[in-house]
Each structure stands twice: as structure tokens, then as C-alpha cells.
Image (cartoon, rainbow, N blue to C red; front, side, top):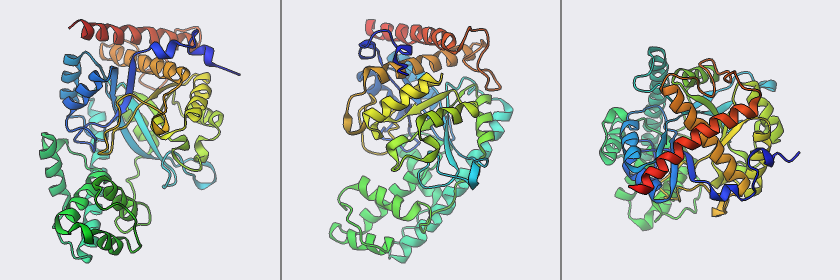
Length: 413
């Protein structure tokens, strides 16, 4: 059945909606942006009315992000991204939205409303997640440094050194730095570029990877990706398995932070599409079975027709859906979400993404002021509505009023 009528009564509605982007990573997470303030400036200049973060494991940067957004007339949406372990899949396990590691699910929390301060329980859970991630980065750094030393590049790289460099570059306290694989890859790429002349870099990479490489050794980002792929992924010399944060613990943490659990869809960002996500009808059933009523695409990695298919099916199942850009590499891409290759999104999908952003903006604002949100503290859809569609319409209107009021104020300033 065509469910597009659920999103809009007008096929042109999506083209008139404000631009929304609900998933970017802000520094000191690995990011294309230099600072949170720069990210907000670019978003405002690009016409983004609601701008959402999905940082890993530290929220220190959210205060300057919120202040910059208020000044720019942009609605800030606060989120988190957590790598989880799903232990109850049939048949012993499968790929989910991590294309290389069995049973690993990336889970996002949207519209976090209890950050400043978080509850004691949330603080403990977050500290445990952060400590496990930091320990993994420490081990991977040591393994990577040993590998580089074998190739004659003993730069004395440590996790503390990398974190200090990231903090200095981003102008933030070192306590805000939660290292990621990309930070490590950048540090080792910089060591290579510092110590090896351009014409010799390919040969050094061949020794490091123990296989010929055709990467453009003048392209820093390409070399970083090659280091990450050849040294840091499963089965590679510097790989350390992610800490086993259970899905249940991550889900509970998101609820304790006042947020909405949200599933980030990989879809044809992997080839083939992971079994957990295909067909989209099965994905919708699986998400609802886990109490997940919100999903998100990073459509720049998806073909337009795939975006529309997932949007139509999931929204038809009562799952609100959003879109972001991640901006989690050094390549600066547009802040407005597009499909693969820069193809514009359809009006159908743009309307759905606008609706999703409105729902989470409403939840965040309502929960922050002590009122009921889209879901309650146990992850249940808020009662008091005739049906799921009435609930979505109500929260959509609240969020739309919030976003358009802020946008109007920006236009008048």
C-alpha cells in the first residue's frame, strides 16, 4: 500500500519544508568541522532549521553547541551514538548495521533532555561505556604504534598524546575527548607524512599492510581511511573488539538521559544489505519488537529509490524517521542531507524527515520542562491519543511550531 498520504496531503510539501539535519558529529568527536560554533554557522548559512548531534561518549561540547545554536536561531537537538552488542539474535548472530562485526548494533539516542546534569544512574552507565571505549583505543594505539615501529616509524604515538593533540586542535578540555578509530588513523597518517617523503609513502604502506596498495598517498584523508581499513578492522593487526555494551544497557541509558532510542539504518550503504535490515518490512517488525519507534538514515550513502522505500515502509509502520549527514570524516560535505552522489531527496522523504525532526524536537522540549514526551521513561509510547497517527500529528505540530518560531526569529534578526 502507498503510505505517502500519511506524510503529506500535497506532493510538493517536502520541497517547502525547512532543512533539517538530525545527525552530525561535533569536535572533539572526529568531525569535518573545526568547532561546534563553526558547525552551527555553516548549518545556519545553509538554511538548516534544526540541527542534531550524535556524539560518542561525552557531552561537554553540547553547552557551546547550544549557545551557538541559540545565537544563530537554530534548534539544537542533542543525541548520542553507542556501539552495542545484541546477544539474542536467532541462529547465533548476524550482521546488523555494522557491516563487518557480527551482532554489533549502532544505537542512537535522540532528543536527550536530561544532560545537565544527568541522573546518577545515567552518569554511572555513561562512565562505564566511556571507560570501555577509552581502554579499547589505548590498546589499538599501542598495536598500531608497534606496527609502525616495525616499518621503521617509531613516533612514540600514545593514546594520551593523540587525545592531547585533538583537544588542542579543537580548543576544548582533554576530558571532552573520547577517541575514535578515525583519530588514531589520523595520528598515524600524520606520522607517515612527517617522517616519509611523498615518493616513498606507497612502499611504506605496502610494508605496513603486507599487501600492495593503490591509495593516493598525497591525499591525507584517503591514507587515513586506508590505515583504518587495513590495520584497525576485524582481523587486522591493530584491531581490538568493541567493548560489549549490551543493547539493553544502551537502551536504558538513552531513556535515563530523557531521550528516544533510534536505529540508524545502513541499508545499501553495505553490499549486500544486512539481513537484519532486509526487507524493510522485516526491519520495521524487528525494531517495533525492541521498543524502537524512531529510525534514521544517512542518505548520502543510499540510492534515492532505496531511501524512499525505507521511508515509506517504516513510516507506514508508525516509525518516525529522520536524516543526517554524520560529517564524521575530514571531507566537508553539504549540511543539507542528500542521497548518494549528491542526488536530491524526493519530496516524500524530505517531508518524512521534517516530520521526524519535529517529533524529536517536541519530545526534547516537552521532557526538558517536565511534561510527557513522545515516549515515557520506560520506552513506551505516550498514551492519551486515539492512535499512533494522532500521536505523531500532535508531536509534529508542537515541534513544527518550535522550529518555525526559531527560524522566523532568525530571519527577522
